[in-house]
Amino acid sequence: MSTTGREVLRRSITGQRRSVGLAALLTSCHQGGEALVPVVIGVVIDQAVAGGSVGTLLLWLAVLGVLFAVLSTSYRLGARFGERAAERAAHELRLDVGRRVLHPGGGAESLAGELVSIGTSDAKRVGQVNGVLPFGVAGLAGLLVSAVVLLTMSVPLGLLVLLGTPPMLYLAHLIGKPLERRSEAEQERSAFASGIATDLVAGLRVLKGVGAERAAVDRYRRTSQDSLKATLRAARAQAWHNGALLALTGIFIAVVALVGGNLAAAGDISVGDLVAAVGLAQYLITPFSIFSWVNGELAQGRASAGRIADVLNAPPAVEAGEATLPTPAAGHVRLSALGRGALRDVDFEARPGELLGVVATDPAAATDLLDCLGRAADPATGTVTVDAVDLSTVDPSRVREVVLVAAHDADLFAGTVAENCGDGPLTEPAMTAAAVDEVAEALPDGVATAVSERGRSLSGGQRQRVALARALAADAPVLVLHDPTTAVDTVTEARIAAGLAELRRGRTTILVTTSPALLAATDRVVLLDDGRIAGEGSHAELAGRADYRAAVLS
Image 1 (tube, one colour):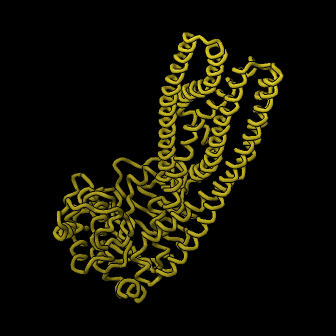
Image 2 (cartoon, one colour; image 1 turned 135 degrees about the vertical axis):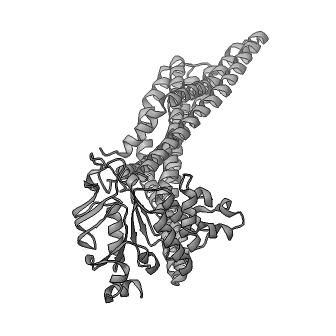
C-alpha cells in the first residue's frame, strides 16, 4: 500500500504522541503564564500602586515571582520533551528509509548521495515537526488565555482577538504555500547534487584514468549551481514568508491596541486594564511569531515527508515469494531458456559441488546473468532454479542465504582487514585462499590494519583479495564470483585459483570471468557469445576456438 507524505507526517507524530503531548502541555503552561504577566502587572497598578498598600504590593510581586518560576520550569521541560520527540521521530524515519533501501527486493534505486540526503536531512526536517507542534499548541493556548482575560476586561477586546485569530491562521497557511513548494525543490536539487558528488568521489580513480576530470567537474558545477539557485529561491520565499507574517501580526496588534486605547479614554476600562491590554497586545507578537516559525517548519516538513514517501513507495525490483529452498541446499543450479536484457534463450547447469566457469563476450550479458542468479532481477523469459525450485517464487532474502553473488566492484566497510573478512570458522582458510596473508604482510598492523570507508586506503588488488576472502568465508551453498582478480598479478592469481578450487571443493561455485588462470582451475566452462550459449567444455578444449581466445586471451 502506498504511503503519502501526509501519512509519513501523521505516523511520525503518532509514534511520539506521549512526548509531544507532554511538550504541548508544558509549553502551553509557559505561554499561558506569559499572557498572565501583563495581567498581574495591571493588578499591581490598580490594587497596590494606586491604593498605596505596601503589603499588597509585596504580595503581588511574590505572585509575579512565582509566575516567572513556573514560566522557566515549564519552558525548559517542554522544550526537552519536544526535542526528544523530534530526535526519536527522525531516528525512526532514518530506520524506515534504511530498511527500504536495504530491502532484499531492491527497487529504491537513486544516487547514493541523494538517498543519504533523504535519510538524514529530510528525516530531520520531518522529525522536527514533532518539536514545533507543541509550540504551535502553546501559541493557541496563549491566544486563548489572552482572549479570556480581554473578555473579562472588555467584551469588544475579547471578541476582537477570538474572531480575528482564525483568519490570521488561514492567511498564515496561504502565505506558507510558496515556501513549501520552494523547499521541496531546494531539497531535491540539494540531494541530487550530493548524489553526483558521492558518485564522483567514488569513481575518482577511474575518472583520472580516462582523463575525464574536467567533464566531471563541469557536470558537478552545473548541478551545484542548480542547487544554489533553488536554495536562493527557497531563502527568498522564507524571507517573504516571515516578512509577510510579521506585517500581518503588526497590523493585528495595532488594531487591538487602538481599540483598547479608545476604551480606556472612554472610561470603560481602568488604567491597570489599559496597561494589561497594551501588554497583551505586545505579547501577541510571541504567539504569532511562533505561528510563523511553526508554519515554515511544517511547510518544509511536508516537502521532506513527500520525498521520504517516494522512497518508501518505490516498487520492489522483485516480489516476495512463498516457495522455499531445501535446507541444507545441494546447490544444483539450472538455467532454462533464460532471457533478460542481453541474454537470449540461455540453457546451462552447475551441478552440485561443481566449479563452473562462465565466459561472456558481452559485459552486459554477464551483468544480467548475475542479476538473475542473485535474484536482483527476475528473468523476462525462462527460469533459474536451485535444487529444482524456481528462484522467482522464493523470497529474495532466502535466495541470498543460499546463493551469494560477489560483485566485481564490491566495497569494503570501515574497520580492520580481519573484520572485513568476517568472523566464522572459514575465515582463516578463506584469507589464505584469497592471498590476504600477503596483503597483511604489506600493511603496518597486518590484518588489524584499519580500512577506510569503501576500502579506499587499500590498492585495487588488495581490496579485491579482502572482498574475495569475505565471500569465501560466508560458505554459501552456491557462490557466484564476478571477475574477482582483475587487479591481481598473474602469480598471485594462479595461487588464488588453486586456493579457491580447494576451499570450495564440494560446494557449487560459478566463476563469471575471462581470467585464464581462474578458468584453468574450473571443472567446466560455458561460453556466452552475443547473449547465447556458444560452446561448453573444459578451458583447454575451448581454447581452440577463436571466439573463446578473443574473449579470454586478448
